[in-house]
Amino acid sequence: MGLAEDGGLLLPRTIPRLDAETLGNWQEKNYADLAYEVMSRFINDIPASDLRALVNESYANFDHAEITPLAHYGGLHILELFHGPTLAFKDIALQFLGNLFTYLLKKTGGRMNILGATSGDTGSAAIYAVRGKERINIFILHPHQRVSPVQEKQMTTVLDNNVHNIAIRGSFDDGQAMVKQIFGDLGFKSAHHLAAINSINWARVLAQVVYYIWSCLHVRAHENVNSIDFAVPTGNFGDIFAGFIAKRMLPEGTIRRLVLATNTNDILARFVKSGDYSLGPVVQTSSPSMDIQSASNFERYLYYLTDSDPKRTADLMRDFADKGQLDLSGYLDQIKRDFTAEAIDEESVKATIAEFYKEHQYILDPHTAVGVAAALRQQQPGVAMVCLATAHPAKFAAVVEEAIGQEPPMPEALAGILERQARCQVMDADAAQVQAFIESHDGQSR
Ligand SMILES: *Cc1c(COP(=O)(O)O)cnc(C)c1O
Image 1 (cartoon, rainbow, N blue to C red):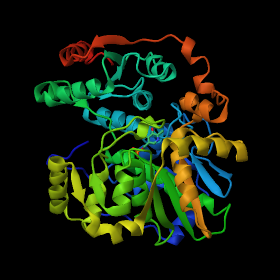
Image 2 (tube, rainbow, N blue to C red):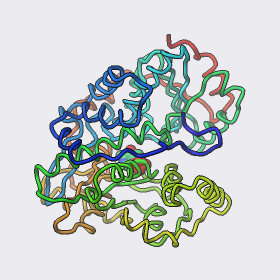
Image 3 (spheres, protein in one colour):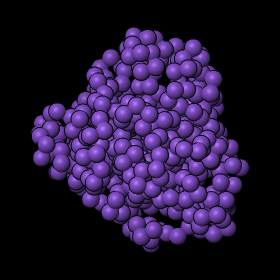
């Protein structure tokens, strides 16, 4: 479920606390087993053996045995979250969500048509989450000839019958507006069981909590510290919100602070620094998955900021919708207990990729570089620093090449992708055409 019936977001009633003994028992667990343990603290309506199977299946398609391995360079711990099928961190949550949807639909006998728009990067993660799954169709809109060739092929070379790529003659905003319009057609929405797979789904946050706990269990094998900071490149406040939940689950002080790293689109960094949460224009950067101004998971954090007051949260969200601006400076002490922040400009992103490569021969993608640049500014002795590496550099080869003078090596998953057979419908930016297309394909996935 995305939005709750009252238009708000869902959260667990309580956040479970993990004690040192539990964590000790988890130390040797592999990633999938740890994921099961963490998730089962929040899930009481799926039998244990089923949940185990779901989790195992979700991480079976990763190309590294540790799923999210830690690399160690220059006093930083790089948490590689890009070993899933589409080489970006969204796989970690979406692979699980795809399996979970299928499992629940089988139980209820229902079906689902997922509809979404992408600017290029996130569509493939959603497609790979549900390709070939029973009871689910997926329709992903991307702007025709305005995504990179690799991004396009990552989506359109998935030939499963339930996958439908639609290239819109228009911009990403056109695609998004069409999706909004179609979801607004409530009769159509319910007749065709339309669903979104966006970042407000709680199950996504939950799946992301796991790798924070994983990191805390494994960093100490490399660095003898009591406290850990995480640098998190952020756009939608999703990944870093998972860190906030993990922080509250772990014993006090295990995670000291979350370093919120934005690109030039700095609304969240301004919020942490001064309490000013005000919309600016969206600027295009080299880290496109973070070119966002209104962060959909921010509302969840507001709830905790207001001392778990749903009414105050709703009032603040309404205020923000009206004015595009909130003054939260009264909460600064509390905000700073959990977060620090840096906004990283384009020049620094490229310089960070270049310097990190020169010093360590390790290639950062531009999103990861935003986090690493912030980490280097905030690093303190005696506290470990984990940087979340959210995408494989080959996904953003052009920017990387500009920074280091050579293309990053192509991982196996992308080798030869430009030559592979593809399938895609090109359409005008007209919601009615997309609706007719959905109508004609609904129910054909079984
Ligand atoms: C989505 C994405 C992010 C930002 O994640 P949020 O959950 O929106 O904070 C960062 N890097 C990459 C590569 C992404 O795809």
